Length: 317
Image 1: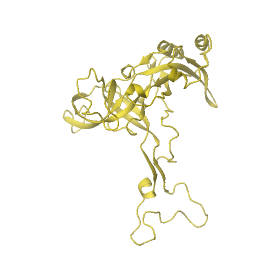
Image 2 (image 1 turned 180 degrees about the vertical axis):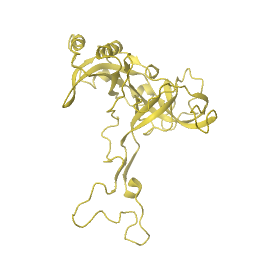
Image 3 (image 1 turned 60 degrees about the vertical axis):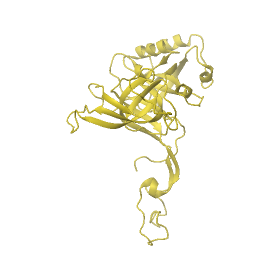
Image 4 (image 1 turned 120 degrees about the horizontal axis):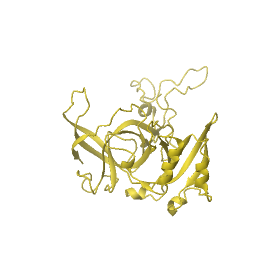
């Protein structure tokens, strides 16, 4: 059944429920985000060992994401017990833009930051509360996206201090990820509405004239017991699901003002427009339609021993 139930996502923003472990001593924020702009072709030298094309030119698909800086709004600490994780404190920056402040409940008391730092004994995880404005990517939406990003590496005290120093500041994509690294992308897929069982589940069409219908199942189950199992393919919602795709390689991190390659096609990308400011190019496709929020998380599977930067010869837009 792969993914089941295939219902509509509750929000336009995908949720990240699992995080990788960072064994280094230096704490680091493990997530960033961007907005899908369009696709390009990347001409590179294949640097994969033991492949037929090793050392040869390779043309592959690349997805351009506009990655405006994210603002560190606050710090959240979680404790853990047998019933799960519980948020123990939220500490926010002193100066937050008005359009972001109205989206969160600001209950900062005097000395809240110092009190939180003193009560770190029972805290198991530190998260940074980050916000990104779609208008910074050139979109019309005014309402910002606010989500949590895990801070990992070192002990809890180091993690808290690291986010404390960043409170109220903006961090760019190159402060979290580097060229050649792999990331996991979380997004909401393209919505296709209500679809029949043939298109939605890949069921086989019936023979011509065998029954009254061709694009329906032959049987939903036995007469007795009178029950339809959940494993029986049915018509329903197709698309607009939350999905995570693993191990997407970052081919390029750059800025349109400084980049040596031309990223924008003439007139801009269809349904998006011109890419301005910071951007990245991921190898392969990314879930979701254009302009949709794409969350980027540090690689959780198949973490390599070292990171090699791709040798890009040309970007064809």
